[in-house]
Length: 263
Image (cartoon, rainbow, N blue to C red; front, side, top):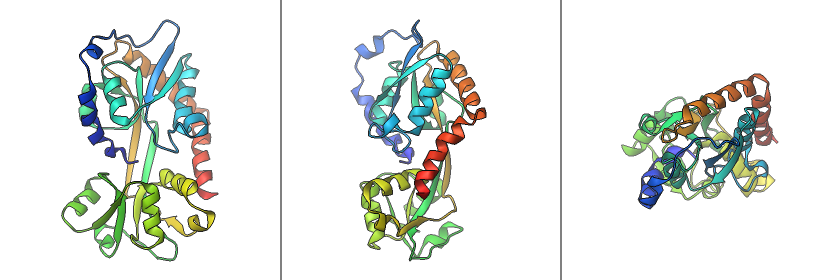
């Protein structure tokens, strides 16, 4: 999901903190080079329901392994994972978009993922756009409380555009199929994964996406400043990420997503 999107859940999660959690010892690495990394559900990038736990999960584990570090992933709700990582209960957290206020608590890795948000639409409903005003004739689908970037959010806030929000991707694509909405903004890989999971081949064949991106985001692995060894750990991760890209492994991993989208 557009985890800007996850911003609201972070504040809610702060209420679950306990006094005892703040007194926990904080060390970034154990002597045996094992770490725990908290992540959240965001298929196909991260999910307990997918073999390998998703391409980004596999990538994180493999990058750490290349540096002699065994990384164990723990799936938590996004807000809870954020809070527990911030107080040092995990050595790393993935993956999150950049926000300047997060730099108070975390060190950012180099970018791990580029997310591209696009408009999905029915193939039999020709659709083109270049600027926000071009979207006025259409009713948009959308996620509840989701953010789609400053420009689209502003157009929704001032009434320039109308959005019929649904609980999840399945609901929004169902609305698209029956013409209750004409366009649906979603991260491209996430959208196609939802279509492959929840809809028949005949239904999927009716839907495509517009090539123009609404929004491009970079996501990162975050390392808590509460742990003394985080600066060293992020440096090792970045070294592994650079080598992973240079070897071609990163491109091969991401190609699995594009192959799924076009199959």
